Image 1: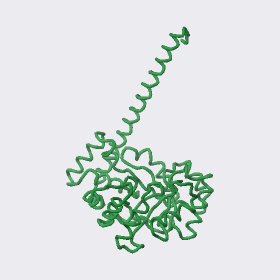
Image 2: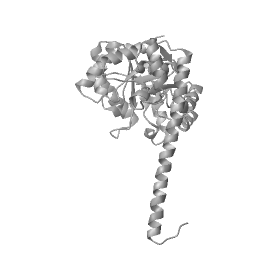
Image 3: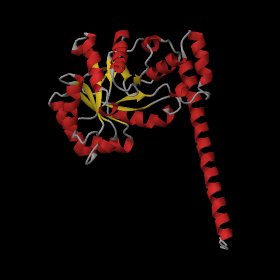
Image 4: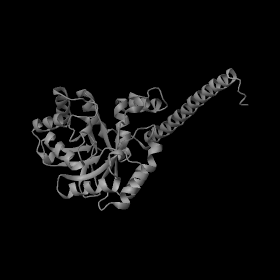
Length: 303
């Protein structure tokens, strides 16, 4: 199946793959990257106040020639420039050159000031005013969502969080909590197993599946993320990779393929936990050794 639309809890639909502008910087080159992404088939652009490139994204969208209804725009309130949520969305709309966005997110719970219920009430007002069709959050954990749903008149449509093979198992309770309230999870950084954590257990099934399907490892990871029912947020500056990312929507992963990546991801997470424990133990031992040496030098008996 290709990258289909996912129905949100407010009745709207969201494209299940997005081109993110987080790492693109700004300037004419960024306009070109977004323009290329749209040209190869991305119909969802994910940006943010904090990325400092909403203006570039908006320029590329306008230059694409697409009707506003044919491009889905997500942006976020990132608590920048001392702007309130109301002021920030107006600034974002001006920079993007549009009258509304499709999805507006609170970028992090730390930006929900003075508290989550108060900030969310403002988000609900923006939706009612038609400045955004849907509202949601990003990087919220279960305790944050519990506070939100207990006070909300309108539940968040989405929660954008980091999702990849090595953290999926630990993120699953958060995803399932969201599902209870119809909150769709959006997953950014799905390629971490090969971009930041190469050489781990996921490499083996990834390479085997890639070879069998004549696909790139990054395509397999995107198809795996798609199988989890999340909106996949990814990025690249290379046009051929953009094309590959779109093609990944048709990659025919089997149930066994998905299970193999799942299991390798759990194994890698356990290894990472063990390494973290060992590093902390080594540091603790080093600190204890220094303390004992200092005590001895001062003639203090602490044993």
